[in-house]
Image 1: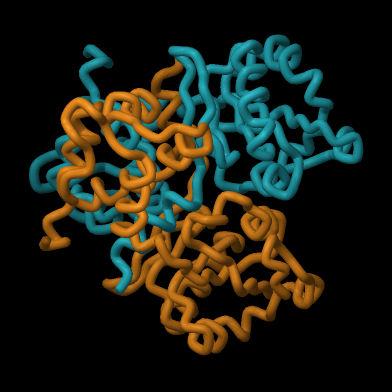
Image 2: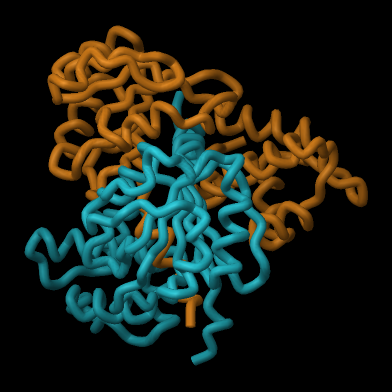
Length: 208
Length: 208
C-alpha cells in the first residue's frame, strides 16, 4: 500500500485511537466498537471506520473490534511496537517532569540521554531511567554515537532553534518541541508542538 | 451565524493559525497569505481559506491577509481577546513548569490559583504571577468564589478524575489535562489533553 495516499491528519488520529484502546485494556475490556471509541473521543464512528479502513479490515460487521488485535496493528503501523531512544534537552522543571513522566512506558519511547547548559544541573541523575544530565556541548556527538533519531526540546524559547539545528546535525528526524516558538527544520525532519495555549483556546470558543 | 455549523476540527485549527500569526508579528511582518501560513504549518492553503471562510472575509484577492486584523478577528472568535482566570491543580515539577510558562502572556490566560495536596508545597509562592499554593480542599470553594471556569490538571494520573469532578462541581467548563488518563466529564464541559506520546507517535510513522 502506498503510504503517501494516507493523509497526515489520519495518521495524527491513530495515536489517539491507540491511547483509547490502551485505556480500554486497562479497564479489562476485550472488544469495542467504532461507536464506543467515537463516543469516548468525540469523533464520529464513521470517521473512525474510514480512518482505519486505510490500513485494512480490523473489525467484523456486528462483532466490533478485538481490542488487543487492533492495538497491536496500530502499534505496528505507527512503528511503536519497538522502543525508540529519545534525547531530552532541558533539565529544568519541565524537563524533570518529562523525564519523570510515567506515560511513555510501554508506548514506544525511552529517554536515554538528557542535556542542559546549566553547570548546576549537569551530572544530576534524573527521571525514571536514572539518566545523568550531560552538558549540551555533548548533544550532537551523543546523538550520533547512540543512533538517536527522536528528540524532545524543553528549553526556553530563545534556545529552541539552536538546539533543533544541533539535533538535526546529530541525525534526529523527529522533534517534540515544548518551547513556545516555531522551529525551522529541513525537509524530512518532523516537528510536533506541545502547546497548552492551543488546547485552551480551542475550548474557550465554546464558553459563554 | 449558527455556531453549530462549524466543525470542531475547524475550531481546533484556529489557535494554530493564531499562533502562526503571533510569530509573524514578532518577526515584524504585516501581511501574509494562506500560502505562506500553509507552508509554515504543513496545511494546504485551500484548507486555510476554507476554514477562515466560515467566519467571513478576511483577505482580499491578490493582497493577502492583514496580519493584525486577522489576529484580532481570530482572538475574538476564540474569545481570547479577554483574560480567562485559570486554576492549576498540581504543584510538582510539571505544575511549576506550567506556572512559569511564559507562553500564556497575551494569549488570554492567567493562572490565578494553584492547589496541591502536599503540605510541603502548600504556602509556596509559584509562577510568573506569584501565586500562593493552596490546599486542594479549598479548590471547589475558590473556583466558585472567584468565578473560575478554566482548569489545568497537572497531578499524577490516579488523582486526575477526582480533581476533574471537583473542578466541575466548582463551575469549571474547560479542563486542560496533562495527566496520562482519560477523564470523564458531564456534557457541556470540555476537555483537552496534553499528551507527548500522541505527538511522538504521529512522527514515528514517518521514520525509516
